[in-house]
Length: 248
Ligand code: 13P
Image 1 (spheres, rainbow, N blue to C red):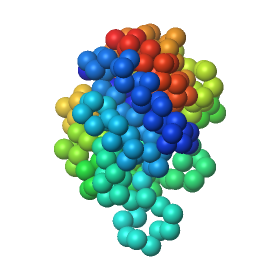
Image 2 (image 1 turned 180 degrees about the horizontal axis):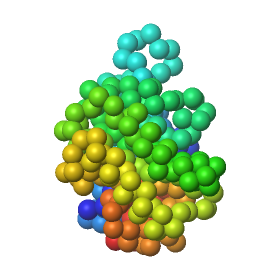
Image 3 (image 1 turned 45 degrees about the vertical axis):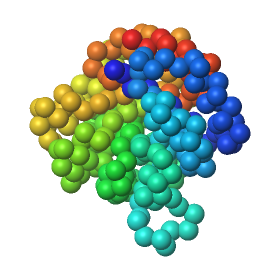
Image 4 (image 1 turned 45 degrees about the horizontal axis):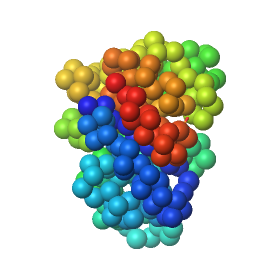
């Protein structure tokens, strides 16, 4: 079954999350896809309460890279887990750019997420300048190797890689299906070389960046991906339920 992850980013108050879930639930077809809603920290507990037993999972969008209490304003893995989330997004480009998260920090966050039994949605992707100078494969390899450094192969069962070209996020521009397929091949090869052939085949890889109702059907034909990470188009419950309906 394909996975569809919604990333609400810094959107929706708790009232808005409640309205959204109430609208989504009657339209949501359980057997179509595995759904993860990555809501703001403030809405995790409420989402868990409203979604319990529906099969829809909840994710956070960030995790602190420290586990001790001396990090004012941050939220650590045990808190996220205890609120009812099962997933956490790590390494989103908005955090890499705005909050200066580098490979070392992302690697620490992944380890702390796994320690707290959270599944990781690891985002990687190149800028437009990197794409135009044919550096995509190199960037992907470096980001992946930095993020996965020191992990055991069995821990990859709890990691989903989301390929999100930065130039495709929120722009309405998307790579060609062939380009996505080629980059995903590179991702799987890096995992195969660093862990094992089996790990390279098995790891779940999603595509993200301007996925919407119109392009979901064609994206879902790409053979080597396991699903999508959806930002803007996930914010409206009708829209998102249509996306779920159209996944193949
Ligand atoms: P958009 O779907 O709005 O392009 O955002 C993608 C994204 O950043 C999801 O994490």
